[in-house]
Amino acid sequence: METTFTPVSGLIGGSMIGLAAVLLMLSLGRIAGISGIIAGGLGRDSADRGWPLAFLAGLLAPSAVLTATGTVPDLGFVAGLPLLLLAGALVGFGTRLGSGCTSGHGVCGLARLSKRSLVAVLTFMGAGFVTVALIRHLIGG
Image (cartoon, rainbow, N blue to C red; front, side):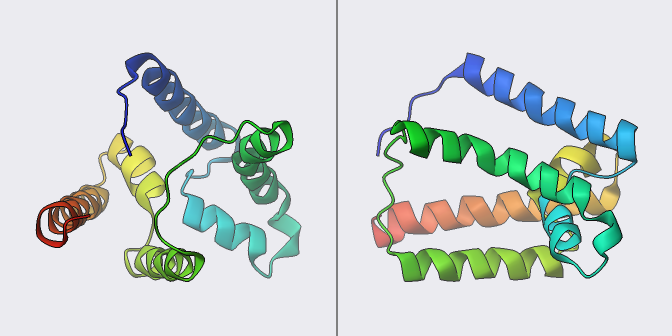
């Protein structure tokens, strides 16, 4: 799968993520960490489910629109559904173990100068670098 660097769309997308994180912090005093938002939206406290469910709906809406209009890009997944489900479960386990996800630590934690988030992001990135090196150079993916 070939990737094309698109700095303008990356800048726009990154700015929108940052703006959403700032607006959530200013309006509700909450951190835009997706794993925490999912836990809040699916948790037992039904009194505070509205905003997490709305936030998650906003994350899923673009995919639904692309699917409905038939303009879903080919993402080039080579793994089957069982492997993707296992990968998702491992990511979920990792977010619980790391007390947060890449969005909470990387976007919000680093912006707040959190040392714990810096360690978490360095760990995420290091693991990603090692995984890509193993798959591309040793396994031949």
